[in-house]
Image (cartoon, rainbow, N blue to C red; front, side, top):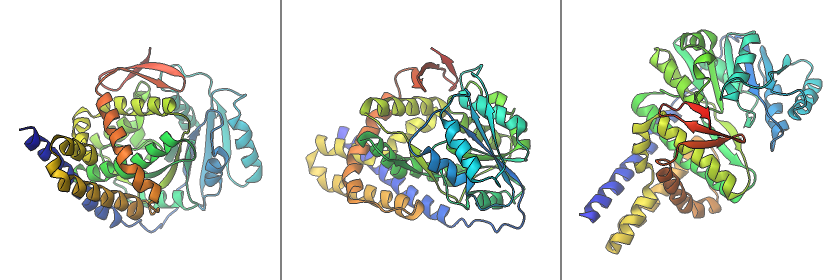
Length: 373
């Protein structure tokens, strides 16, 4: 009975891997539209402190090859060290319209949304690109997004991303999971039900669409405001698409404890944002499921080996074909360990109601809202 149950789970997981490969092919058939007009765009960047690669991340937006855009930056305090970086870049690129806002402390839990609100209030243009400070892009990102907005039915564009961790073994494992596992889930969701969510690092939205979903005021108490924004836009009938443009998402570095807090925040937030989908994530873990089958019944070693090979093929498809990056030998060695770690954190996501975010502890509600703990 146990063997049959585990075998069924492994079979379901293999079917999921097949869906990832089909979904990746469907995504790759998408072609960016040709830019026939150049609507002006406002780029909104909340900042807090200095992080690895901040200057290179911000520079990539000063270097955009697009005729009409402005850059807005928001910090809480006038002594934030990130301002020195912004001011250097503003002096280096005097032809790029750029502005700094000092917001003060947020009056509600989500400080990022507060910064976006303040920038939205002064943004000059209809299309807003809201991106995190750890995002890095090539010079054609804004042009690609502008082309995708030429379809009047499109209200929100969200960018897939390659996660990059410059340092820290545990963070590099985390990035590997995002690139070979999380991205696959995004592609499958896109294929099966369309984009009913958005990804946090970079989101572009029309102002009128943002107003229609209740504005940023409706997101002030959510931890996963990106997911809620995409869900609300889709629910109101606006087109939400996964951009053809892949950005770089330079995630943090550090020891295991810092990565553990990040992973726990991720899984606990995800479980509350989409509880049914979170249960279904069991099937995104083929290697742990096959390992359990192997431990329970060693005679199924060919199934376990075949599952590992399928997992490798799926990882190659997402990294090499979609992200257009090389899969290194170290990646091949680390994938089984990362998958096991990811599975353990998935289990941990069913427990606990608090998260630590930017030095503050928050209580998570059932609907994903947060309150200071």
